Length: 596
Image (cartoon, rainbow, N blue to C red; front, side, top):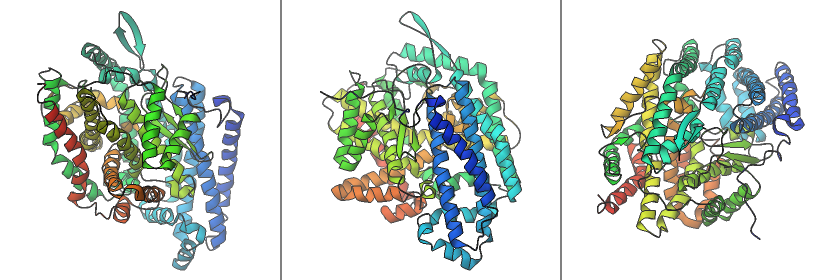
């Protein structure tokens, strides 16, 4: 008898009882005790005592793994219970623990600064330290850019009820939004995630239009509140940069991505050179949909739709099969994730919108969140998040400091597994309509990273430039969004969503600045890796695992040089990964010639 695959994740196997879990409360209590002990210990540990420092760093990494698991587990609880105040309170405790650890890291950096040249050399050559040497060098280099230790600690303390508090408030506001929709003669209130799904994926344009207009209407009512939140988050970040003497607003983002700023500008220039093919696709899409011009709620709507909804069990089989074709290790990993309840996929109210993968380093597991509606896009999302989970799986055996992966390469494994599933489906499409629907899915995913995200990167840079002068009103932010979209679409898209900025959580993220552009970096970098995998065949899986294992030990430039033999500072590198999307668009244009 075939084993039933549940659409709900199993959190109790990690911490029985969820928010009331005694094991969870014990972890919180232990972390509170440990952080106090570590804060006291770092004041006494002698930086000239190499073994003493190594032991202390081991304790720090044990704490980091536990606190990371706590943080991600509580976010899992929140994602399926967005209106539960008890969970919000627990998340607040987690934020305090995280802030305390960040203060401890500041103390750690000061200890590193006190090393003499010979002491630092001896420390780096210790066998244990060699495994996370890259992280130590990186932290030491940042010391000169920071404020005096007490000021950096003060910033961390104030961020809990300031910086981080505004992000929490944004999530609460989004969770409380209700969008009224009338469908089949019945009125219902949808979460923002459900309403956006209707506005984007419904085959009924009148329903898409209704959902889109209601989203704009409800967002307009709340726009000034969301503008206040965004202004405070951006303002806090700019204030910190000013105190540190940082003139370049992209400095932190480039460091977090472990990539050179000029490399990113080179990448963006390569992308802008290919805008013509994007406009050709949108124009043809409008013709296929019998529209004079597209509206914002048409741009991501499939113009070709598969006739059937794919049951979740079948979706699991598709993913598992394609993963096995790449390697037995990856396939077996996917089987485990589905059968051991790692994935929350049920379509129901009360869930957060979007999708994510949470890491559980103590358990050496992951948990995946999405809302599965039966579309092939949802299958690709599962493959994407399982790519993250596989990356976690590889890293879970590394020291905690070496699990600190740059934001950009964090998307490498997820994009790679997307390609595995989607390209196989396109190749085996049995009808022209099915092939066109899958081609369009590949195109839309590609253009999201190659066109839309870079436009958001440009929007955010302009937003920060204006925010330096004064807080922006909701109307000013919306006008800036409209200007960016008009430049992007070149007049092809008629009706825009002036409040799109409200529905993009990356703008409100506090841990990471400019949290859109890493997806483009990771997508294109992964495409280069994917091309290499097809070239090398069965020899590649082991090399792929090694690349993932070293993502916490190298810059993006170093990874490309080591595993792709490429210089990503050159425009040629970034043009090559664009080709799969361009090829898919050209095939789409050919196959639709007889339709228009």
